[in-house]
Length: 368
Image (tube, rainbow, N blue to C red; front, side, top):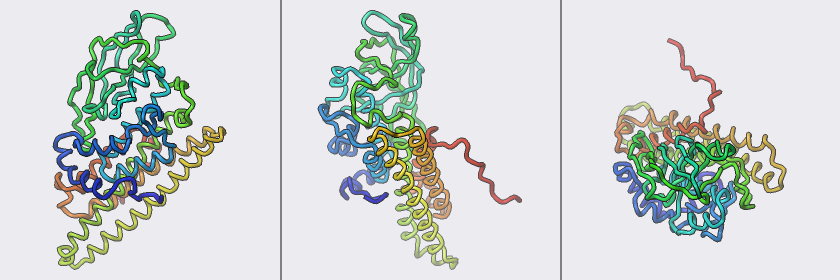
């Protein structure tokens, strides 16, 4: 499949999710219908072992899915990407615990890797307390993961551990007030003296309980490339919607006599060309790293190249928006306009620290 083609989702699914986008943003949650599509297609289980109903998708294939889902609608794509990423923990957990966590047809993990909690070692497990921000999918998660610093007990445990918590052990704090991706339910969670048995405590850097190739991908390029796919998909949706805005405005713009329609559509085509070129480089890097990984000779350089291309793809996605959005007229400024929502979603996705190139040069305009 060429980059940018929506083939996983039928026309009916695409229309249903997009038609609900405004309502999802207002309500701050995915629609039940959107979630149903995710469950039916098994998209939360792309990295879950087959015995638990998963697919164990190769990384390059999963990245295509993330892009397609995000092109359908940004919140939808983010949910798929974050939700499926929780399957990575299947190789960190004891098999019997993984069965409990992942066997449900609607199993999905929400949580945080930031060690903002504390855990006290007790007989048979830990008592965990704390709060954790930005837990996307919090309103429908069947398991929460939270990272905490261990206090007391074996000095070898004096490090951050992750804990799998049941929904009834956490309180959702509805504090996700970002200006984009509003329907991702990326709220904080809070736990107060929740007992977690040893079987539900794990370390993310010790994911050797299973042999599947995707679990051996270094976590950083795994995450960087996943989020980049979201940015690419949202940018493609933005350019689609920009074309629709231009076509709908064609007659009105023609009255200005400045060839505005031709100018704007030319910018859209150029943005599409640039994004396609950069996206191809990103997928080439993903395929190269993955193939080397399967051969057993992937180097740090292969994974670093994927990280660089992921950041570059996200930067190009943002550039596409900057090169097009300001030329779409004042109607694009209305918060309930689809183009406005998509642009805000794109900026929010690209704000993720893993997609920001902190060595990028400062962009300067012409001096006065």
